[in-house]
Amino acid sequence: MISTAFDYSRATSVDDALAQLGANKGEGKLIAGGHSLVPLMKLRLSEPKMLIDIARIPELSGIRQNGSAIEIGAATVHHDVATSALLKDACPMLTEAAGSIGDQQVRNRGTLGGSLAHADPAADYPAVMLALDAEVRLKGPKGARTVKAADFFQGLFTVDLAADEIIVSVSFTPVKSAAYAKLHQRASHFAIVGVAAALQVSGGTIQSARVGLTGASSHATRLSTVEQALAGKPLNQQSITDAARDAGAGVDDINADIHASEEYRRAMIAVFTERALSAAMARA
Ligand SMILES: Cc1cc2nc3c(=O)[nH]c(=O)nc-3n(C[C@H](O)[C@H](O)[C@H](O)COP(=O)(O)OP(=O)(O)OC[C@H]3O[C@@H](n4cnc5c(N)ncnc54)[C@H](O)[C@@H]3O)c2cc1C
Image (cartoon, rainbow, N blue to C red):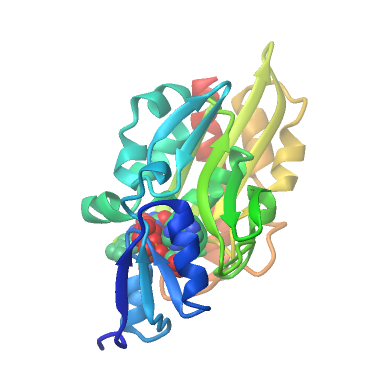
């Protein structure tokens, strides 16, 4: 199927993109990499009259150190995240997650902001953003606002983002002792189960942990029972194995589809939670 007819315009700045969204009165849609939007248009699940291209807006691109935080522009493509020397050193979980997305073509076009806005239940970045406790920075006609990742992902393809707003960047304090592990679909590389785990360790004790899960249910979520089980425990394999054992037990609404049954996904949540935590421990 081909999409319905649309016009195309390239925005030159965030304010220009916002002005164009406003001028099109709900009929315009932002396009970044197009790797999620274009398939929807071809299925006629999305029928924008105007595509506003934000892929080449300079202020939306790049990975920068901002004091103790790292900020990534929303139009930064997955390849640039996967190969960033800054991120490889300071936050290797994020480079390994980005490098596991799709194939080279997808990574060369797809963007961080597009992935977060689209919020596919099997997307990789949402779990990582939860584990990093990242902030999503938005701009709209009423000004700028910041949303915690934990509040951003709300449901199936549903996020805290209005139709007239744009994701400008994400910001987070990098964590070195963190890792991402996923069981992926062989064709697309989307997560059947993906787990991002970040540990805060001091003197051989796990002070706290943040564990994000994707692929398993309607939207990415924190594995709070695992996090609670790890807090205050010695940093060793036994603590991790004990905490991960029932990781899938507390997750409601586990998906079942042609790729995996509910039972299999639940079992894999435990397996991949242990793998992500073990890899995070190795970096601590
Ligand atoms: C074959 C294939 C394999 C894939 N495999 C994976 C995988 O393994 N893991 C994974 O996580 N993803 C995967 N993806 C998805 C890919 O990462 C997409 O690129 C990504 O989800 C969307 O990014 P985009 O820049 O292409 O967004 P687009 O398709 O351009 O836009 C998607 C949606 O986000 C909105 N949007 C885009 N940017 C912004 C912004 N800055 N602010 C507000 N709204 C915005 C658009 O209006 C649209 O509604 C795959 C895609 C394909 C085609």
